[in-house]
Image (tube, rainbow, N blue to C red; front, top):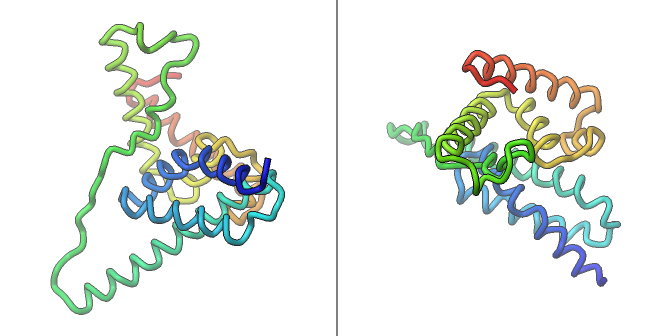
Length: 191
C-alpha cells in the first residue's frame, strides 16, 4: 500500500475521535474542526515519511499543540477585546459533545436495539453524567484520561503526546478516575 493511502487510512481512522476530543476540550465545534484539520495537515506535510507506527503518537502531540495554540490565540483575542471594548465575551456555547455516545451498551447489557426505553434513558443519563463530570476535571487530568481511555493510547504514547513523563500520565489518570468514581458514586452511579 502506498504511503499516501496508508496515511489517508490512518487519518480517516482517527478523525472522529480527534474531533470529539477537541470539541470536548475547546467547546466549539467549528474551532475543533479547524484544529483537527490543521493537525492532520501538519502530520501529512511534515511526518508522512515516518513509519506508520509513529503516526498515532505524533498526531496526538500535534493535535495537543494545535489545541494549546488555539487557546493562546483565544487568550490574546479576548485580551484585545477587553482592552478595546466593554463587550464581554463570556458566552459559552455548550453544544452536544456526545463523546460517550459511541460507547453503547456493553456485552453484559446486550444490544441497545433490544433494550427497554427505560434502560436506554437510564444509560443515556449515566453517560451524560459521566460526560458532565469529565468536563469538570483539571485540563491535564482530562487530557490524560481522554487519551488513555478514549483514544486508547498506552501510557508511553500518552506521555509522548502530552510531553510529560509516564509517571505523570499515571498520576493524572489515577486522579481523574478517582475523582470521577467519587462524584458518580455520590450521584448513585455505581460501576
